[in-house]
Length: 573
Image 1 (cartoon, helix red, strand yellow):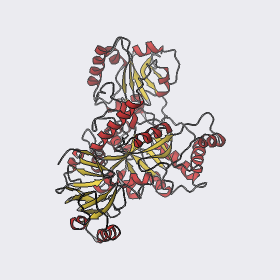
Image 2: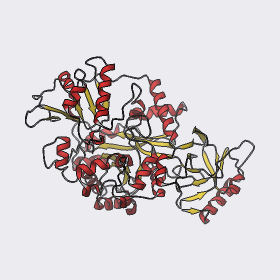
Image 3: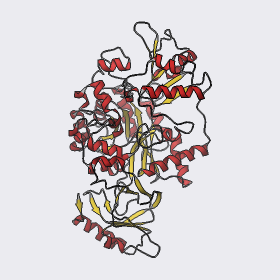
Image 4: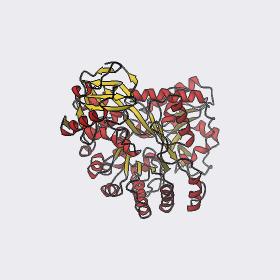
């Protein structure tokens, strides 16, 4: 941390000489400006003209930009940071998730069952009760609800607890969907003694459920829901986000919102890639040829991100592809029988090599959903092989989630220039469950931020926000200050401190959510730090991020969020 050292003096002199005739539209004075530049310079004031920063320095320096129409904000010592960039969100899903009804924060089985019983009183008999993104590993009891418990709570209503890669259904749901002990589907878990379904099903069996069609919203209603979700993000200083999964249709929708002046966050849209039929070099080339735009296409508001593949399942449903078998405790919890089971994997090494090679050949950067250490190792094997065909170090390839990183994998990532797209919310919410299920030794590799950063790996900070609108109680919490706090303190939601040597500094945590994420989309020259010439995306904080007590970090909110020089959120200070 450096205050007013020679680099800042040079920076101010340069901007004053180049911009001496410019008049600022907006000036922030008398604050603690955390620039997050290369030296983590701290300044007193910043000047903005249009949507760009034109000066950073002392109050005396920046006062020279003031003119008759300049709006000046006295920060009164408040801390200012660059706009927060969230590296991975399920934005549309989250925005629409509570339009019809509130989703409960079911942290225990009694709360879950009470909610189901309440739903039976407001829904007609036979009407589905669906809880999206339910994870039994997040219940305080750390177990799946029993089929008998679900049946008692809802004897005449089909229930589906959707955990994305696995879920629970009750007897009424089986009856309606004609699922029995004779169904014989590999996604249906059965009791080894009776042969009857236990209620736990894998994602492959979701297709058997006789679910009602989802309610269709009008285009206008969708746009309005998305705009309102962005406003919630602005309250916590989020000015840019990566829509982690999506399509060209999503990209063009956001472009439409930009033209209508509805966006208050900038959006980078990853494009999902699911090959059709047999994977061959020819079929991949043909499919990618049909894609109109590639990584980087767009502008400062909406742009195309990575081509994204889905490699495995999830850690909360026992389907992540681990580096070694899940083990007996996991088998008991998730209901699988094979002692050598490591999770699911959707592609072979050879198929992934063809996919990544074809993507790079067409100008894409590439990322993959990979939630387990086995997936990390497989991807690194693939990236190493592809590197013999294409230089990958400057492509900013990334691994989304990863979660488990052995030291050998971290060294390979450093050598290949692979980014670690991490979501500290998973550590905050799930490190306790992973410790219980996998054991303390294996959890030493779970979210090793210190090891990754020390090795020189670029770590991207995101939330993986899925459903619910509340910043702190959503699945997963999108409050970036909870993410930073848990990475800094290694403290979980349950108050447990796990593997403290992997803690990082406040400065490193802030870089994860700002300049590092700008690098992920090749935008470090225009955002991610408070420097002249960059977009005026900034956040005035409710507390001093650098000096407040550590536990106060998670309570920080924005008192003013500025995107492109315009105030998009303010609460007064």
